[in-house]
Length: 476
Ligand SMILES: Cc1ncc(COP(=O)(O)O)c(C=O)c1O
Image (cartoon, rainbow, N blue to C red; front, side, top):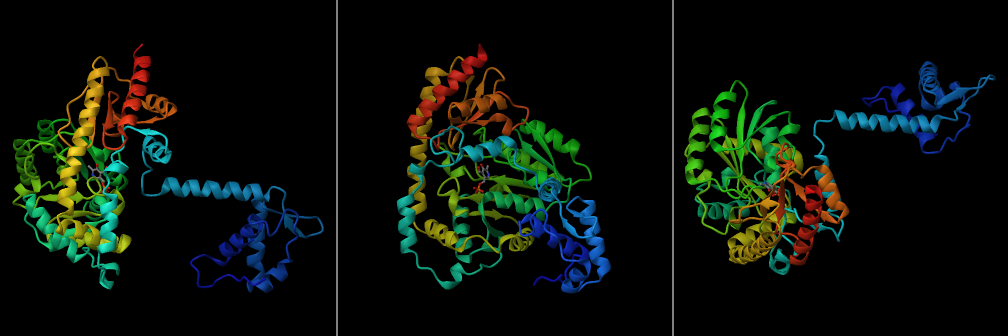
């Protein structure tokens, strides 16, 4: 026997020896019936007191893993393996349930799982279809890029300087005047939300959000022990903000330009009112602006561009426009906030992919990105029109919707409250994957988030016919 307990370990000698014997049995090295060395021999080889060995063996016997024959020898019991296995599994369950982070909503887990099926028709996916991704141009830029050693080393806490400088110019066109020091590069917009939830707020803070909201479908704030208050209209939000603002910290999250899932765009007046109110109550606003470049119409300026008081934390990303796989997003905020969140990010991942940051900087500083966006908007518009035609032809009796003014989604409302989990699962049986409205508003059983961005036109047509069949069965 080579192994000896480690006296410097945080585990006691007893715990280490217990684990060591259990592992031998579990891994099949000591099979059922194996006679263990005597207590004296074990104590000698493991270099511990005999009393420690006696205690460990007693505990293993009490747990049914070892038995002692009348003659005195100790051996591995018949039920040892099962017992160890059960114990192990029960332990993991305990660890999982007691852990800090919430599990994904079960429907989201199923969506993530079924999305791996290449043949399923994905009617809800919030991602560009493979034919809309600029794969060839990206491949060319990978080849043309000159990479310096520092570009692919650990980057500085706020992210690549080159990319942050490129972003200041990009943001200036969005009406946001900022400096590279006030920008943090993140691994997608979702990491920006996670950083805010763990780095900026106290537990049990109040998070106000528009309803429906993308934020209901993910759990960063809920996992950090915060309470979420959905509100339907800006006026209602204003009332709620005033009444609920107590001692707890509060924050307002919104997607003012092309909301996910509703596609809604807040008017300039609504933006100004919200900003004014949040500023007077000192409630920070998170403006999630990941879809703004996909608008088919002119849109009001970003809330961040109207912000004189440093009240707005602005989030952007290339996931919806260029490639979600690059995992590049950004966060714009007053310097102390950026400093704090950069420090938290360094503890999490030592920075986002250096390679991806170089690619995005390259696309922003050449005309590649702008040209790609122009084409993309046209392609998305064509897809949106195609789906609207299908809806007009077949869905008028069963649902209502608004013609999209950009982005990926149609917030399709069925007349009857049929969109429950059974409906979602019934469609999976038909090989169709949808994003039900209850993911974005837990009380909503009328809507689905219909995405015209991902599936092929043929799939969109076929998938919608299958949805219609199931809806008609439900309505009978
Ligand atoms: C409104 C909104 N914010 C953030 C994200 C996350 O984006 P990223 O891929 O950049 O993390 C999404 C993705 O669906 C989204 O719809």
